[in-house]
Image: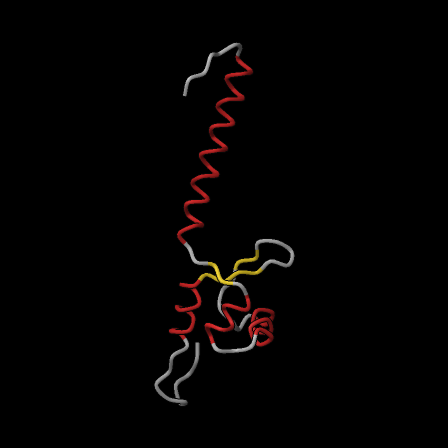
Length: 97
């Protein structure tokens, strides 16, 4: 980084700007490696209706989810698969959870 330091304030602003940019790029690289599914995609993957998935989310029965905003819900693909595998049973006699 080539920066001509005019005064202390300029230096601190440049450091803060670089820190924010580096933090943002680290976060973006972490999030880009995860496959996030919409409610519709996750429901299709589980072969259930989106209404059932929404109800499970409210009651806590469903797979873990990410809430990115007041109305934005996403599911990690790996979490859906893990949750589905954890519910696999050999017979109806086996107890869940």
